[in-house]
Image 1: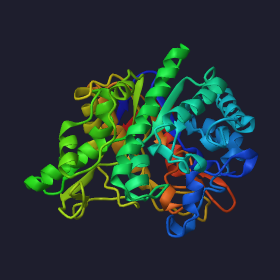
Image 2: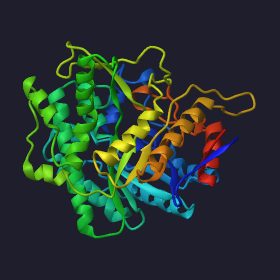
Image 3: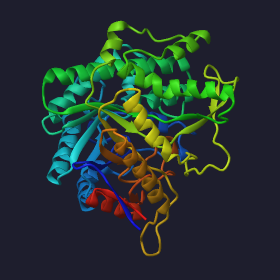
Image 4: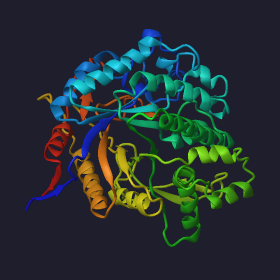
Length: 453
């Protein structure tokens, strides 16, 4: 017997993307080089040495993509704005052509009845800013405020939902310690410093947004996931999992929502001789401002094993044997989605949440009938929408769900080898094909419900 899980009235269903992943046109209309352009040019950094030079060519094909969104009933589209398009030199002169593109995109979305959700920073920092220290530079928050102000001046009359930063953990640690993201550094101290100044920048922009007094909502998008001990009964794995949680989750939640950094992590870093950021009282107060929503990017939980040879964390990620994983070796752990939503409500007292990203990568081919079947993605989304519904039933206030991603796109270090889209993209011809999951998601939107059999 079918069971229908109804979502709240007015629940927003949409999809998400990011500028460097979909726009292409990296040299068009005076856009300057970004750190991702530079990173992709370094041999060995990206699968197949792929780049975002063309990507989905959405800079030139946005009208067709928005029309396709409308046919699927998409109600909201989260996109990011490329700083190298808006202020090519990072600071100073504004590039009207770059801003005009986003103005046209917003108008096209609104004409189609689709709510625009704009992200100010989704990783494509101008290379010229990196050349003067990037996010380690204490002046960077003020440059970011200058850029954000230019964007607000152009779009705030038509965009009601704003995200300051996407996944600051990734910018800080994947970009500056692990090296798997641009700019590709391996410096733990630098990663902590980047995380700090990203949050100072966030605080300045939120403060400016409030002072403008215009209607609209502002938040931040955090990638949060459970860090589970590989061997639950092992005290060393338990302690390692707590440190891993401190590194990924609490280091980014606590300053925003508690006004302080986690004390156990501060003690651990001091014990290991890690040089910490300046922790200025006024700057931390700036980080700790009321937000209209927290954006949750949830994909999976990870399992953690104690490893004394990894400095300074002393842990590593290791999946249990037999656990189901996607093509990125990410576990499928929908129960962690419910758990994280409840944690935000109960531990952090978050009153309003937007699912800013959720999705999975699968291997897909175009059939002889010119269709793309992706039952694994449908199964993943079913599991996670059921988990989301359980959290809402338990009292968590979630007002929307933005699937990652609308189209297949350039997936950072994985290049074009990792497909997350509801819509298949042939990257040679730029043809779009709505996948089986895209048609399935359209039905979810139409009914505002998940039907289980």
